Length: 287
Image (tube, rainbow, N blue to C red):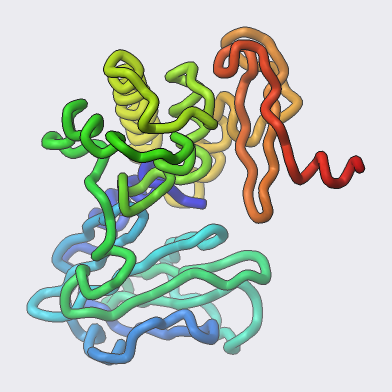
């Protein structure tokens, strides 16, 4: 799933590509990709794109005196830039979800989604806050105002595992499964620790790991073309997606805990004092 660093890189890429360009056409291809009906999508056609913003994992194409096109790529969605006019496509065929074309031969982009669980979402709204997912977002973790004191205040009293807290978009915007694994590994912290149990020193360590991990990922993604972002993300992971491989810090084997629709990866030596975390799903399978 694209998370804050990849979506920020896409925002920067699109800012250079679509700023001051007029939208020639918008074609929803996948069934149910468009989640709103007022204003209609046609209101965007003929409008000039003024800027591209990011809200957590949401992309926001702003137009002059007009609606916003807000996109959430979900788990398997992606944006593919096209410099030339593509061939026509039929609805329901292939991964294409929506196609945007700019005027005057300036190119455009496709929104695509792999797999069978179609969750990519597109909204045409007067304000980005009209999208429920945007309205409920917590603070941006890289914002100047989000200091360690604000972070500590968010964690206070939350009797939930820190892995889940980092992923909760209503608590902190933009962090997903991959970067929460990486942040906790950098902080040398178990994903099962309760947020409310962290002492001030641990909160500070986790805050620095969060900022450092995200800023590093944003910097590595800066200037990359959209098609190169996925491989950059995968190659930079230290524990996420690396179950069974050696930890690059200590050499221990990276372990995995599986859940119904996701999994987490961690290093026992770096994060859990050598203990292996219980994997309830695998335990049931072995009975």
